[in-house]
Image (tube, rainbow, N blue to C red; front, top):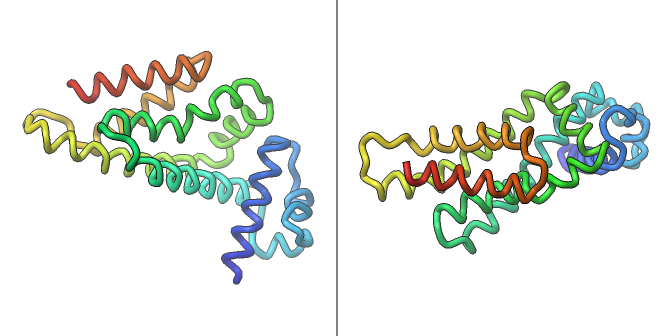
Length: 185
């Protein structure tokens, strides 16, 4: 039961963070959204930063689950990799650009939840590496990068693409071109 309650708190907190951003949210608001008292909230989390880190991880896990469910519908390795990034970042990219709250959540994740963010990207890299293993085996090229290294390069580059792309359309094109480069190299 405690894990269910903790998950319920994190889900409520995530909704509050998405609505108001990080800075404007207090432990009182998180407790209210979760339907518990503030002292009850402190039984599960010692600070807003701790709740935020848990929310980042829960959100990433939900994206990984969505990616995993949608992968079988994608035919090629390139389509699978592009789909993973579509779910992971592209679908919400324009919202993040145009919403001060979403932008603040993104910025705050680097400031208050770097470890959780890194863990999230490691999970994405693991999914990408499992997709890319088929490409590495089928190429037979001894000089080819490992699937894990390709996944790391892809996620690292896409993290940078988020900073330079001006729209989801541009981000999608950058990802498509990168996937072509990785798969033909």
